[in-house]
Structure formats: structure tokens, C-alpha cells
Image: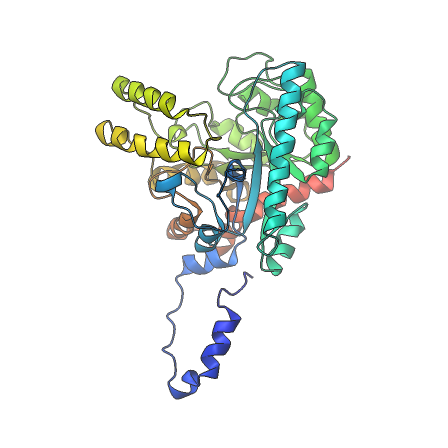
Length: 410
């Protein structure tokens, strides 16, 4: 069961005034079924890109931020509002040059980001704790804290030396994906031209080492051939930490029904993400593209790693562009189409949730973790049970982690 959100001090203060004895409090209305289901589930997201914010001067996860003001989507106040218990915080490394120098740079970048996650948890130890195994999630919740698993998006930090996987495992990393938008020395990307025909020889070693260590393999961003080979080679279930359904929207980042069924047959899970470009058609307006290009050049746009001043300037400059050349954005209805299709094809035991927040995710109606109860409300309205909701929100992902732990070294 989830902990009570009523502060003990407040309850004692009310009792001390005699207010309860003098005048009975009005009887609370029973919570709707969806609210009970959300409250009692372990609510987690398998892909937060939030660690990219940890090094920004003045940015603190304990402060409530505003998506419209600084573009961020995950912080403790909004986690509390959304009933979110934790999740996987990603070490995302942009794919840079390949080769000895590039691999060393990626390794160092990944180590710094892992350190930043640990520093955040150490600074806020009263609110967060590192989780190293599936059972830790419930144990940390019992301490009235939120759990932080570490994951790696893009395996470039270990591409130069697979033995580095053990070093990152020692730092707490429990999920790894081999590739991002571009091919690397481990695997082909879903959004690049085939190079290896799936996994490289080193990528196959990556799969074997993940199984040996007890690291969940993540096939989001990987090509269909990589997914096929992961399923064939891995001795444990794998996950798609933030992906969608190609039958609903045809994009290479999404997977087709045949792969959904194969993923489920292997015990894996797809976590449906909320990234508009993978869920609905994207309009390309030449004038808008030119204006955006000029804005990026003006503010020194460098993706997720911007200073606070750069970010504010970018958000402010983008508003008149959006007003003049609006682009349709996917919404919660689109999201639920992917979710319900995945459940229908793969089964209730093989679907979960990810917003891809702080990494480009966010759609109308689902702009931050504070909006997550809306998904539960939609699931209950669609006829799914409280037990089903618990599986989707955390049960399925934690079950995969448990099975990966059990298969470790086999």
C-alpha cells in the first residue's frame, strides 16, 4: 500500500485544538476508483532524462519548476502531485565521434553524469534513495522516499571497452540501451542507415555482459534487427524503455505488432512514451524551420545542455514562432491509442509508461509527471482493473528487473 499523504503534525495539531470533538468533520467523499488505483500502485517511469538538469546552476529537483518557463518536466513537487514514486534516471550520452578519442570522451561524459545523479541523491537523502534491485523500490517507499534507479541511454560510454559495463554497474546502473539516434560501435540505430545488420560483434558481447551482470537490456532507439538479435541472444527479458506502436503511427522509433508479440513472448515490456513526433504527423513549414534555425544560432542552442539564460532565451524566442506557424501536437488521446493497442497485442503483463520527460517528451494533456493520474483515469474508464493499473505503472517493469536479477550469470 502507498503511504498516507496526511502530515502527522497537522493531524496532531487539529486534535489538540479540540476541533474534532467540538464539531465533527464532514465525512470525506470516497475517492473515485481511478484515484484509489493510482494511489495504491507503485508508479514509476522507466526513462527520465532529468539528470541533464542536475548540473544547471540554480536548478534543484526539490523546487517546483514550470514547463512553460524552463522546459523541465520532473521535480519532487510534481512527482508528489502526480503520485509518482520514482523511476530510472538516464545517463544520456550524445553520440559523438567514434574511435579511441571519441570513446574516451563518451566514457568520461557518462561517468560525470552518473556522478551527478549520485550527488543529487546524496544532497537530498531525506527525499530520494538509490535503488539497486527491484525489491529496493518498495523498501525505499517504506522510508517515505522516492527511488532512483540508474539507466544508460546510448552505450557509447562502454563502446570502447565492454569491461566498463562492470564499472557502471558498480555505480548502480541497472538498465542499458546500446544505441541512440546514430549507429555506433555496438549496434544499428532505428533512425540511421544499417551498418552492422543489427548488433556488431562487440554489441553481441554487450548483450552477454549485461546478462552476466544482471543489467536490463533496453532496445529503445535500436533497429528492428537489433531487437531480433537481442531477443535471440538474451537469457533474460528485455525492455523498450520509451517506445510506441508502429501500427498506430508509422515511425522507425516505434515497433510493429510482430515485434510486440515477440517481445512479450520473451517476457519483455514496452513502455509507451509521450514524444509527439513519434505519435502524430509532424508538419514541416519552411518559414518556421528557418526561424527556428535562426533562433538556435542566436541563443547558442546545444540541445539539452543549455545554460539557464540560453534556455530562457530559447523558450521566449520560440513562443512567437509557435504563434505564427503553429504545429499540431499529439495529445492524450493519441497516447492512449498506443497504450491500448500495445495492451491488446502484447497483453497486460507487457506494457508500461514513460513520458520521455526532459528529453523531448510531452504532449497536450501530458506535459509533466504531475499529469500522470490522467493515464490511470483513462485506463479505469477503458475497463481495466486496479490490478491491471498496478502492472502497467510499475509491476511489469519491476518484474522484468526481478527476472534479470534471477538470470544473472547464467
